[in-house]
Every structure is written in structure tokens, then in C-alpha cells.
Length: 370
Ligand code: ADP
Ligand code: GN1
Ligand code: MG
Image (cartoon, rainbow, N blue to C red):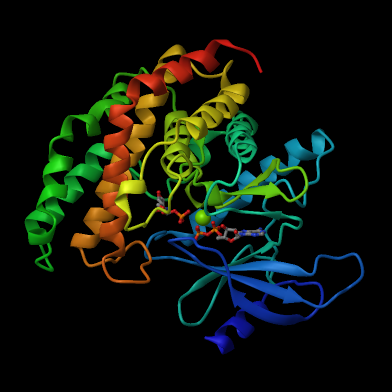
């Protein structure tokens, strides 16, 4: 592997010489490395090297075209307001041939980004100010892309948040039972089946033309936002592989699903899993402070439901992957996808219990300013 990493790194236009390449971050999909380079004056010295998971993203060329265009759009906006283009958006580094990605002879696809300095991502929430700032930044990201021509974006994973199709794929995995794991997860299957109708709610509203499609991020985990080390501001939204037309509700719901559960996404201590209302409050506050004027009344009405739906959808996806033999999400131990599924289902049950409070909180920020 070390040899491949070195070979690949030599294909990009880097300033300085590579000193070390280490695995980095906690993403479930791509392979991420930190590339440390030696000093060359004021130039950047560190980079992020990523191997694109092309089992998941089966059209890497189109995917990279999306990222190139989205980041160029963001750069223009950031420049116009005198922002720092090297920190407030991802910046792709070209290959020696002037391409935005490199295909190795073994068939793998690679890209390099400038390393964003003096900022970090968090696996778990450390302060409510961070949460507000992250939600504000995700909202701002949508605002910055509101004039991007959505029809020109390639759909990197078709039907990514089509929860109904996710449910159908889950039923197909149960029926196939390839690894004979269904016997271990009957309560989870029943829990999901009891909520089948929910999987159609947003897709039906889309079909009826009641919810606007926007350019959205679609993977708004708390570790996909870089928070400035000094100010705590959400300075850069990262992990742009799933930027494509979607619902604003997906971005809010997914942010809640991940951040508002104060324990790890794969904890085995299920009794600790719950929706923290203070965190939810900060997420709603931050998101609505950027998008209050943009969202339609129906979008705002469905914000609390979106948290339930994204939690449900991820629960379905984790269980489907468990039943299919852990082929999609990276796992590092046995039953990790099953534990992830269980966490989502416990979280969903708690969101259902506290749904009235979630609705009250959203209502409070949908009218108020600041
Ligand atoms: P995945 O798709 O696997 O989730 P990400 O693109 O989210 O991969 O990257 C994984 C982690 O690497 C992030 O959570 C973040 O900590 C770090 N990271 C990614 N891009 C950058 C960057 N440009 N600068 C600094 N850190 C980054
Ligand atoms: C994956 O890539 P990462 O780790 O940010 C997944 C999301 C899931 C999430 C669950 C492309 O996100 O959809 O919600 O895991 N990304 C993709 O933690 O499938
Ligand atoms: Mg990520």
C-alpha cells in the first residue's frame, strides 16, 4: 500500500516533497490520508489524499466533475465577499496532467485537496455553540449553491434519499437472507416494518410537486464540517461527493440524526441513545437563522419529521448492509452495522416520544429572528 500511496502522490502538483502519508479521519466510505510535505515558504505544506470508493461512486469521472464545478462556484462566491478561498471551500489539487483526479493502473481513483489549516472536525458534539455554527454553515452552504444550475449536476448515487426505495431494498435483503442473519434481527425487522408508511411521506410530497428540489449536501454529518480552532465557526463544509439535487429537509434531518444523539453512532450502550433537546434546539436555531426566509412553510413544517425520517433511513441502510454481509459501510468489528442500526432505531423511538417538543422548538425559531 505504501508503494501505491507514494506513486499516487507523485502524480499531483504538490508544493514541497512528501514526508509522510497516514490514514486520516473516520469516514465510512472513502479512504482518506493526510500527506505531510516539507516547508516551502508560505505555501501549503499538508494535503488530503483520498481514494474514491468506486464501488459506491460508480461514475468517478462524473463525480469529480460535480466537485470541480461546485467548488469553483463556491470559490467565486467566497471571493466576492473577500473570504479566504483556501479555507472556506475544498480546493482540488491538479495532477501533473492538469486533471482533477488520477486513475492508478490498478483501477483505483484518487484526488488531492489542500489541507484546511487551523480547523477540525469532531466525531461528537463538544459544545452547543459548535452545533449552532455547524447548522448555520450547512444552511449557508445551501444558500451559496442556491443559484447553481441543479440540472447540470450528475446524480452520484441515484435515489440516495428515496426512503421508499431504501425500504424496498431492505425487504429484498430480508427475503434473500444471503448470510442467514435474519434470525438474529427479527425485532429490528418488525420495528422497521411497523413504520413502512413513513418511508413514502417525503417522496410522495415530491411527486405531488409540494417540496422544492434544491442543491443540497445530502450527508450533513457533524464530521463533515470543519470548525475553526479559534472561533468555533463552521468555516468549511467538506465531503462533497453527494452534493446533488435534494431536499433541504434531508440536510437538516441528517444533521440532527448524527449530532443530536450524544453517544457514538455505533455504541453498544443503547440505554444512552437519545435525542438531546438542547442540541436539537441549537441545530434548529442555526439552520433557520440562515434558511428561515428561503424555506417554504411546508418545508419548515416537516423539519421535525425529517429528523425521524433520516434516522429511520439510516437504520434501514445499516440493517440492509448487515444482512448483505457488510459490503457498503466500512466496518472494523463484528456486528458493527447491526449496532449502528440499533442505535438509529433507539434514537428514532426517542424522537417519536419527544416529537411534540421537537415541533415546538422548530416553531419557535421559524418566526423569531436571530
Ligand atoms: P468520507 O467520505 O470517507 O467521510 P471525508 O471527505 O469526510 O471522507 O474525509 C474524512 C475526514 O478527513 C474528515 O472528517 C476530516 O476530518 C478530514 N478532511 C477531509 N478533507 C479535509 C481537508 N481538505 N482538510 C482537512 N481535513 C480534511
Ligand atoms: C456515510 O461518508 P460518510 O461517513 O460521511 C454515508 C451517509 C450515511 C453515513 C452514516 C455516500 O457518510 O449517507 O448517512 O455514512 N455516505 C454515503 O454514518 O453513503
Ligand atoms: Mg465524511
